[in-house]
Length: 405
Image 1 (cartoon, rainbow, N blue to C red):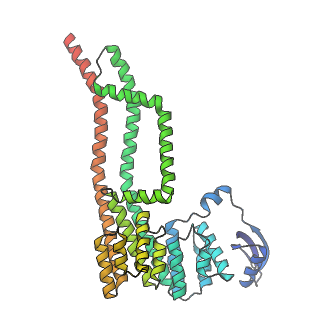
Image 2 (tube, rainbow, N blue to C red):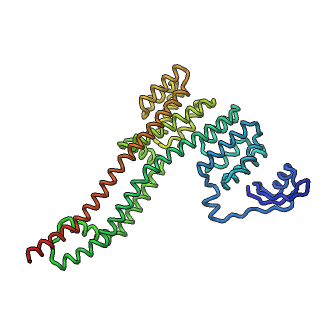
Image 3 (tube, one colour):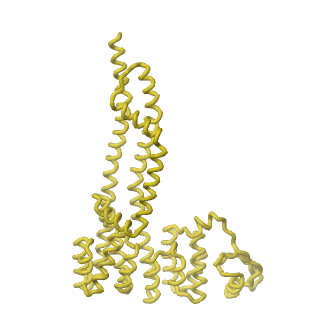
């Protein structure tokens, strides 16, 4: 499907220009006839190679949130599905998403369901989005599902912003430390050593150690860089494999602070998504199938979720399946068991999702507060070592000069 620029006239003779998605010019003419327009000329919109590869299908999260909210609003006021898609497609500011919405509208007009049309664009719509839309179509609660999706993507964006904020300060400090080491150890210290050697001053161990490190980096930097690149490449290839990703994500959960944050984030996604999908009438089998396929952000917990589903299919309760699979905290198991007993399991998951959401934000803030003094201490330590490496030999020189006079 391509994007066409067209020029047409309406019944009053007024010239109308625009753009729409179609498979060929005949489809453009047919679509314009349905709108009461007569085609004069049309042409395929040309895109640069960079736009095709980098910009055409990249959808920002805020644009996706806006799309879901607008879609839900238009359906709630009574607009038909095709009219809603057409209205949203004209008003969206994102060209990539506007093009996709136009193609989805055309596919729906051709007889596809909304879910089937959206399924053709996996880079824009995630499996969870498609499952929610499909359930909304089947159960007649599509506006509610769209609002739930918008709220879910807003939550994800908020958590992502918190982590970016947490990583900004240490990244800045690390860059500053690297710059200081590069300048002082790579240039200033060797120049000072030349002067001190001419004066005959003995060099302390701090200075000689830094000088040897500087010389080693200058002579062996190609091997170090090659080793680093190979190591990073091997790590990336390993974590792309199923066993590698599973092992790395399992070890990540054992880290002191980051492991707790990663676990709580995965549990928040599990609880929020489970509650949302269960409230729309989705079956337990469909929920487990979707959530165990890269929906939690941690492959190990997704594997445990799939194991829990197998236990449930053997006859276990939901709480019993989670307990036998292992990897889930007792607090969550107790909430699920209570929800099953009282018939409010969706409320239990929703409540636990809110709890783990608060825990993620609290732990992230604690991490941010802890990183700041650690980073300052590290930066001060680096400066102290560099200053000592220069001042100690200078102090010895000044002492020798004082003894001379």
